[in-house]
Image (cartoon, rainbow over all chains, first blue to last red; front, side):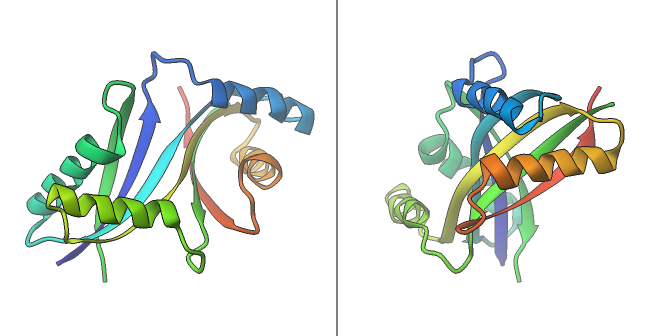
Length: 84
Length: 84
């Protein structure tokens, strides 16, 4: 079965996100001073084959923990959808 | 009212994504050769104040089009949630 995992990898809430802070500051110049917080991470869309949803979740977790996310500084969560 | 927009900014489907290709190749070394496609973009979590949902959507669209996304090479879509 084909699955598509939509993964969000974000910096931990406790950590400063200087890129997000820079965006907040720059949005003020676009008259968007109502934006109080921005945090910037990565979005990964992954297509994979697996025999079951449990196996797919295991594969996505392995990929995130070993390659995609730095689990010391980042958290990841994902949504798994059946692909066509 | 407070809103939180969860924005995904991804490279257009028609464009090559070399970063994603590199991830697919490297996942093979983790015994994850069942992963057929990876595309990598950005995820932005934005907290903002707005009088209504329509106003919030307008603000998020302005921020995406003018600052966050390069609409020539990227598409964005987002989900708007009420913040606490």
